Image 1 (cartoon, helix red, strand yellow):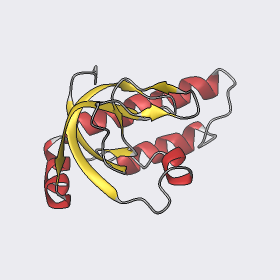
Image 2: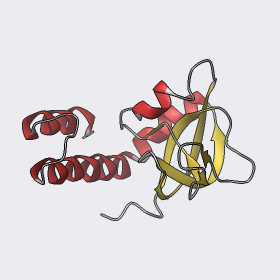
Image 3: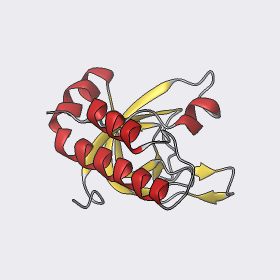
Image 4: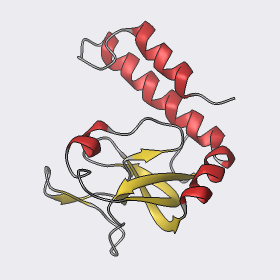
Length: 137
């Protein structure tokens, strides 16, 4: 399932930029949209928790998936700020897209692992366990 163009909910630390594109300080380039720390039922992207998140407020958004940022986070366009309660209820509405994201990420990790790259988790079994924890029925 192609996730690009699908609607999803997520959160980020700090408000979404008015220009509709996050700036990646590591690559010194604008992202393809607003980068999210977490979307759907996925785990939070570690780079957000380690870098820009400290001391910043969490904001919830609904938007359209446009691609990935420089830290492999999902970027959204046409973001609409929503409440925490809306976020919680819409996560279930977008469950199928969330599951597609989980499968895409886990399949990608397995491909990289089999090609000799270091990934976390570092075994196929652990990746499958992570997949099963994040997939929603």
